[in-house]
Image (cartoon, rainbow, N blue to C red; front, top):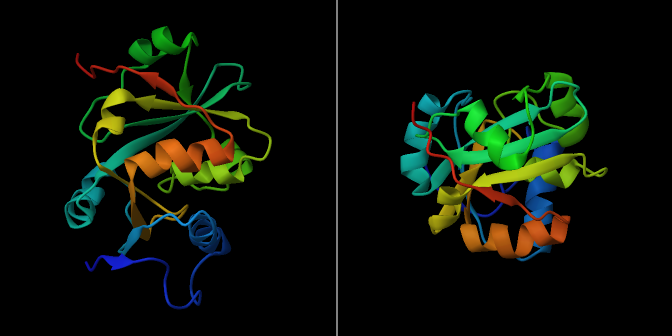
Length: 181
């Protein structure tokens, strides 16, 4: 896998939602590096990508409450175990579960396996609340998909937190997840 600076030379063979991510980052003058790879559906599949990117690739979980009225995008380190009870208590939402694929597509224009913080640029109604484990904010770089799981990008964590999220109108809720049994 080769890490390259910036967008692909040609949009040919790329989905429009991926190109929109590159357009958005370029408009904000955000420097990023990219790796194209085989489909990565799991954190295990992302291990080699993580190493090549030299960034923390997050586990991104799309969650909702039981009534399917409140939606959350949780970013946490890939090595941590997700404990519903632990998160529910901190964000004041009981009975969290994984949201249906149709909501992921409706609000983030993302399909399973491609969940990414960059999908928030598609949430025009601001229906999704961003929740970030504090450990994600500690690394210099963060890795994520550009709304498709055949590419990964590396951004400076500071650019995400200080430029991208404010530009999108998101203030993340920072949580502390132990991820222990």
